[in-house]
Every structure is written in structure tokens, then in C-alpha cells.
Length: 172
Image 1 (cartoon, rainbow, N blue to C red):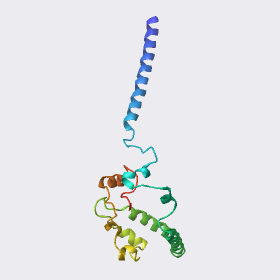
Image 2: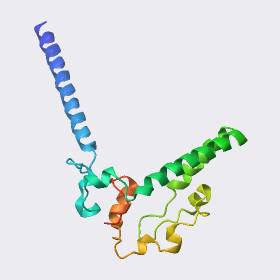
Image 3: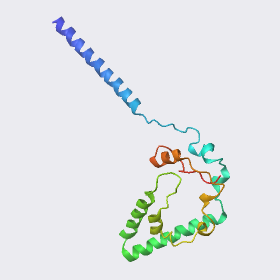
Image 4: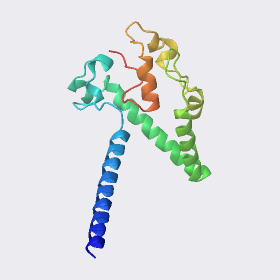
């Protein structure tokens, strides 16, 4: 009977060892599955001065021009009024359909590179083709001498979700 007792103890010990090995194996697998990205610990991507230029507190608080905030708020109220008019005229589903179209067309872009995406479908939906902006009679800001060309590798990383930040740096 002592033989059976020893074998029962050895079986229970063997089971415990196997369970422990299984736990260790799961831990190793979790460590291997950890994301292979470098996290920006201090301040995030915004403090990357080599890619995005020097930032200051003033740039984050105020907009580049005093009329810019008035322009954005007027545009937002105009869009909200248009949504209400469409909802009253065609029903509440029509503005939601337009929002879905806007989301789909805003995602459709050319891969990052030398030629920027024109977003023609998005402009046609939002009415941007009918607006006559400053870039239509002055020049495209991307043709300026102060424009820094984008880093194609960083642009693709942002498009694929591997990195954070804007696809290309703005004017510095």
C-alpha cells in the first residue's frame, strides 16, 4: 500500500510540475506577443522636434490668426444648419447617410509620397469644389520654399497605424 501512496504522490507532484511549466510557457508566449513599438514616454510625439519643429505653449493656446476661430465656428454652425434643413426636408436618415459617405470618402487617400491626395470625392460631397479659396489664386502652400517635404517612411507608418503624428509636418 505504501507503493501506491508513493506513486500517487509522485503523480500529483508531476501534475504540479506540468502545470507550472504550462504557466511559464504562457508567460513566455505573452512576452513574445507584446507590441514591438517604441513608446514615446516623455511628452509623446508632440515633443519630437526633429520631425515636427519646435513647439511652444503659445502655439497650443491660440490659433495662427484671430479670424481663424471665427471662421471655424461659422463653418460649424453653417454645417449644423444644413443638417437640420436636410433632416426636415428628406428625413433624419439622409444626414446620417451623408455622414457615412463623408467618413468613407475622407479615408480614401493616395499613399504617402510626393503627390498629395486630391480627395476629389470628399470635396464634391462637402461642396469644396464650389469654394474659391486662397490657394486657388495665391499658390498651393506645398509649393512654397518654406514647406518641408514629408518623410515618406514616416508618412506610411502613420497611414498604417504604426506611428503617431501628422503624415507630414506643417510649415515650420
